Length: 172
Ligand code: SF4
Ligand code: SF4
Image (cartoon, rainbow, N blue to C red):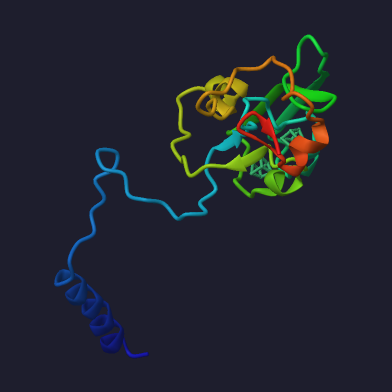
């Protein structure tokens, strides 16, 4: 390519750009929508009666290539039940200094307890605040639901919950 040709091509780009409408995003005053399937902050989901879907199995932690997830499971008891099965996630942490947003943890989860939201504002000015625990990751309680610990719906088993036959506090 001759020098003159290279220079005119470069100025051509400049001239074209001068007459195009500028795209200015007014973030953070105005948020632009992100892609519908954007991999943002995780969420630990609940059943309709408020029980947690996480069974503390640690499959998400094993699947994570960045070693971002720490799970410590514990046993449910009839007096203190947080999830329908035998176990629940007593401690659940995601380290957003490590997470690369790949979504492999979501794929590994057997109960669909873990999904990703489109929330992307995950910056902070210190390390400890970027390790999110259950206080930040648990989904809000559905309307009319009770915060765990509490018993399963009358007559329902953990299998009924996993199969989705327990909705709105009733076993179908
Ligand atoms: S999105 Fe990927 S990197 Fe982030 S916690 Fe899940 S598996 Fe780990
Ligand atoms: S989020 Fe899913 S994969 Fe991870 S510990 Fe809980 S149930 Fe297991």
